[in-house]
Length: 344
Image (cartoon, rainbow, N blue to C red; front, side, top):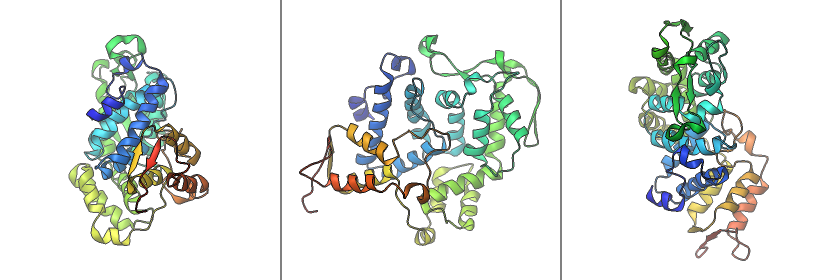
């Protein structure tokens, strides 16, 4: 982390400190740090898991506030938990100012709950679209999370951090997926949201959905249901231990049967720079290339994250070919990137 801090001064900053820096600089440093980590880190598998959870809990980095909040989410939510426990990861995401702001939960109040975060929590983060919840469940979950918000920019050192505002919490009884969440005092109301997280984490649909997503990432979309069931069993028995789930997914027989995957632009570009000795002095041109290829880092605009299937990516071939050809062209190299082609 020290090297990152030397090169990218905004990475360790608080949100209050980031307010003194142009939003574009903060966002670009976060993106460029991801480039350096993926190209040069010895923890390549860890970085791939960071990419998976960045999509699973997607937050578009564009925007005056999210340009500063997403780098903090990446630093404090995704990266520390990428190989940890899904329970801890989901809890951290639910408390993430970036997520609450991105999905409008920061303005969700009693009497006028905003359902955006509640819906994506059920559909994308835990149970899946066919997980068995209803629109009424979405509405009740939204009520449970009223008051989960953030401190505003003028709040001094607490600016941009999580805040439970009891004044705007819905204190009435709720029913989520058949579970009664009792009426509570406003001061104790934060427990409503925590109860929802526990209900979702323990639900079999969550075990299946998260395991399917993990298997698709590691083994491909045609992973047999039996393999997904085995990983889901590990999720349940281990309480969401991500490493244990990965070990189950990557059994030798599963790897032998896995399909080949079409690399997304980010994965392809990073792979190219890892297989030959690469020097990066300025990654700005690479950021432009990724935009042309359709996958700027942290740039997917909707909460579902970048697609992980060939049908979406197969049509945009030229930027992929051009990157590989230009990377190896010593007479006209990519600006800011050079490779040692000796022996290739």
